[in-house]
Length: 289
Ligand code: MEV
Image 1 (cartoon, rainbow, N blue to C red):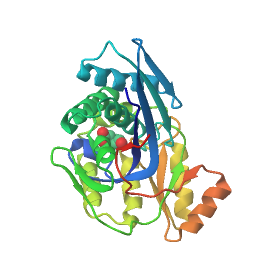
Image 2: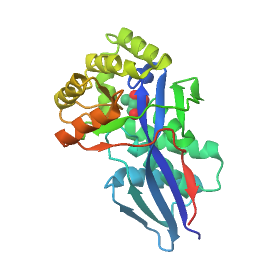
Image 3: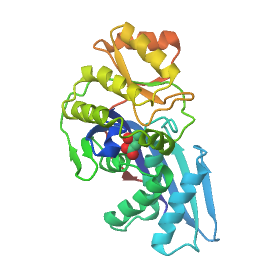
Image 4: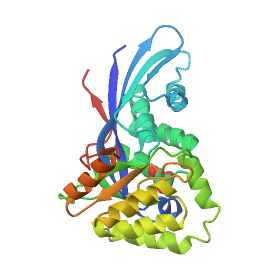
């Protein structure tokens, strides 16, 4: 059988993480870093995963859910995964991987079915997810997303330039961070509302306020706070993007400065790892062999 190659992008949340789980709107964009999956049917009944990601359990989950839909649990398949996305840093690496695997194994099947299988994988991986990662990775571009109502794609041509700065890999998974916030969700009702308002009236300069609100709900660790204060000291701003993390790193920071070169100089002087990427790229797609 033919070899199928699929690639899916990562994402960055401009505003609205965590609050989106409780029905507030979020603003999210794809980033120009992709996960690539190549699948080939093999004769013997076995699943071979060549995974540079080392997230074999998620890959296996996505493969088995797809094979079940095809009623082909007895078939063998070889899946090769490679990714430009940092893992578990808030850039949607698992949604990109899950989506690319499902799309490759269910090529030719209706989209609603692929959506259902990706959702199943996302739910198993993250427990109570808002569905935001799945929507943006599939649709691409920049969108307003709200749980229940769905998404609306936005057409703003000149999105500012950002730096995606690595504050260290969180040891907590997304599901764990979401569960931590859930425990005190009554207390944070007002904060969620204010985060939702930022998503609706988003401007670059609101990144700072969004970050303060994320600190209020306790999803930002000490190292990330220190880095963000240093960025603010030179007139820039930054926020976590995604679920965050408190014990060690807090994942990727969305960094902004009116003069982006100044932020770049700081980041390079500090030897922080960073990515400068295009926003709003195409969603999941079949690649030519
Ligand atoms: C994860 O990318 C964003 C969170 O809001 C969780 C979710 O929306 O499911 C933290």
